Amino acid sequence: MDKQKKKLMWTILIVALIQMPSLALTPGINQITTTAFAERSLGAIQSALAVTALLQPVAAFGAAMLINRGIFSKKALVMFGLFLLASAAPMAILLHTKFVHLVLLSASIGVSTGCFSSNLFGLIFDNYEPVERQTIIGYHTSCVNLGGIMMSLLGGLLATYIWYGGYLILFIGLPAAIIVYYTVPSYRVTSLAKREGEREGEREGEREGANKASKGEREGEREGEKRSRKLDPKIYYYCSIAVLFMMVYAVCGGNISTHIAGLGDSSMAGVAVACTMGGGFVSGFFFSKLSDKAGDYAISLAMCFVVVGFMMLSIFVSSLILTFVSVFIVGMSLSIVVPRCFFMVSTLAVDPSTASTATALVTVVSPSAGSFLSPLVFTNLTTALFGPSTALRYRFVGFVMLTLAAAIALITFLNGKKAKP
Image (cartoon, rainbow, N blue to C red; front, side, top):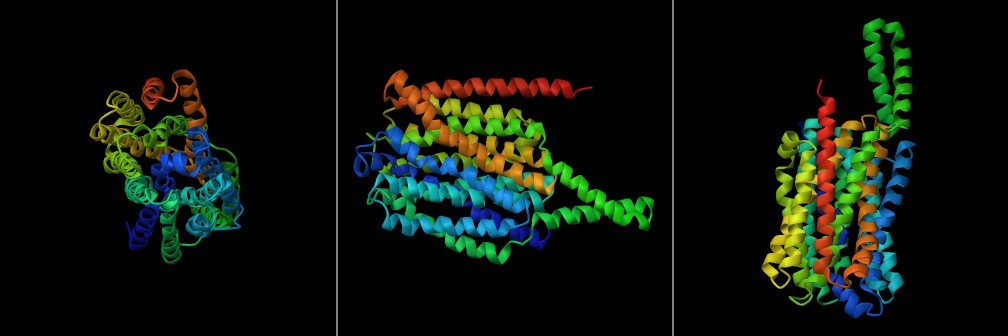
């Protein structure tokens, strides 16, 4: 890896530290419910915060369209997203007295993360080979979780003083944007497509003579345009896994503040979220080796971590230490399932234009859809079935994840049999 690639890698990892800003807010959910907007239900508060997840895919697709048409570079949209994220801090100071302000802040964060998170992965896809890519994705996920640890701890601490304290942490987006400005190369998809066409033209010229080089260039560009119009169907398979996984996984953080309300204050909820991210931080370092050896079976294995963690949460309700252990185990799944989906999509989307759309789908649209649907489906469903019990909610959703893990293992097995001669 040359010097320029290393510099870009470190910038990507630095920005990854603030890629999950919602974790700065999660520890304060109980504080928001009981003090700021006591007239609102837990489901309403969770849904207001989930507006972030609703708008992320909209922003990501909008950014992908602008990139595909060569209007903006990925660097420009990453910087815009980081600047918008930083603006949430002064917005929270000025606007925090009404429920609509909570929704507005969530919308702002959703647009900002939609702009920079998917394009951060786009930079990985564009600038690194598959072997480098798989390693960097593992490191990236560990940094996302490390950042989540810091944000959840600080967010939980600040939420004990003011419910919107977590938003103040997001000002860190400003120095991150400055780092991006000085270290990330600026290029547009049209330039990449032209470069691919030129390479194709050169190869054609070498085979058939220099007089056909220009024809080869045009054919290369047309071939790139054709590829950009279609996505490999397997991309949708991995996107579906990301949606379903995040629907279940989001139950952990979305309910942990209420689950341990009788065991500690918002700072303890922050520690619990930090433990969840700690699990992801650890597993991110061995993702590359596990992904190489186990393939898609790694997804099912990681989902079993969620099952174990949720069952422990439902059983050891009165133990704060075992709660921390449980969420740590749950968190280990995030840095295996999601990176595996990201990596597989990166190997399927080889055209620059296709990569922009595919990246938006798997990095933002799918996880965001899962996070948004999670409280709407599981909080409302389990409340109707079991009442407000978070222990029974964790147990029910754990069985859902176990079923999903078994289904993916079966699909992986059948695909492996088809691939054998």
